[in-house]
Length: 440
Image 1: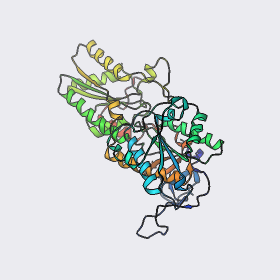
Image 2: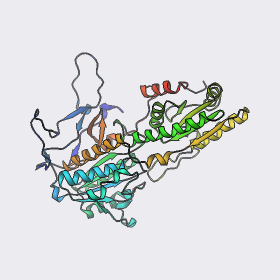
Image 3: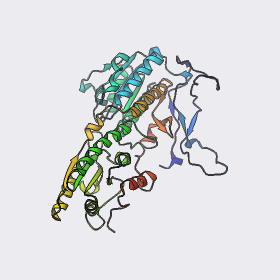
Image 4: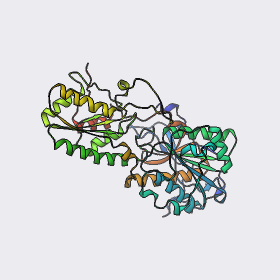
């Protein structure tokens, strides 16, 4: 992303003039937490060189998240809505819980509606009732996976969605979801603005693939890696216990191979990582199958991780999309399984391959402790932003600081594993696989 062309200014609904019910300090140095001021920023880039530093431009700083001294909405008048969209992801319930508890306990907001089954829950033809939320309803939901509100892909008529938002008399909407969800949130916010309504729209980034641009990570990613490591351990045990054993594990990662790369680094038991960002050939003297054969002959077993989006340029014969607008992928896992078995059959070499696809088990798992902490803080920050009348934004962690990011900036492009950067270099060092498996 060309940072010079990005506007990181945050839109708001108007002047904040209502004292916050949250009591904090306005004096620096007191032994009490301070409010966050709107002119409190973090740098987008932390890269520096020795010597005098250039002036920090507006497009290089991000507004810090947190509670403000003055807020926009009168808490007693607020009706908040929460919606979760797209596929499941560890931590959705944690975010819902954090939003509800912060609204209720910190601001005194007691009208909170859960919109069920994604944006479809707004459509009159769906005839889906809302779920009234309170601390008692959500106190224990962080212990289970999935989402209390249900989820669905796709949306529908933005105008109809905003009609329902008006009928529900919502003052703020929290959208928990990935790229497609936040694109929908921006369209909803723009329709709200067109109608001159005072409704805040705040997004919380959800994708196990970790492919949101700008932010350090999206929630659910750490849990996905934790669970994938457990699967890789099982695959390694199977492979190392069999004659010429091969463990093949497919993990999520439509366009970004973060889960695959980080799982390999965490497990120390992976010999090959295949991701969408790094092309590879199957056949030929420098192809993957040749290197796999060498590994088996040398060590009598191998473990492979493949991201679901790998090899799609070779496997997809036609492009179709799901309700969220995502490209429907070919199954690279089963394809590789069959090609590996055929290769070793052709050279009359016995192998015992075990193929594991834990994708749905991983994404439906409860959040790990590290993700639970992250989700709690994301939910709280989202509430503080909405109560201050900020809109069209996503809460994100950038350089380990919680900040407000314009939705349009975050969805402008995806985040990818850079084959020239340190994460992939460290992955290669962990696996000892060739830098490139491409025939020249």
